[in-house]
Image (cartoon, rainbow, N blue to C red; front, side):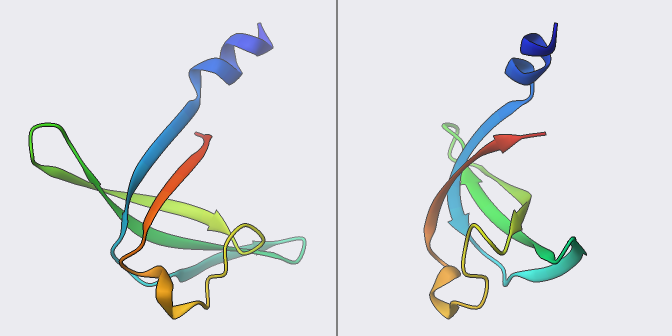
Length: 76
């Protein structure tokens, strides 16, 4: 049963970072930040997806982050 839960909650998005990283919270010394990702659709429209990311996975202080294309794979 646990396998079904893990399979159903997986997500992969690819898009352009369109905002600065904003601090959200900290747990056990690990900071988490929010950023907006612009994800294009096949219909030529776009969705803006809020993404939470750990400071251990990406350099949130790197000014080159905004405007970069990124791919994220995680779970809900």
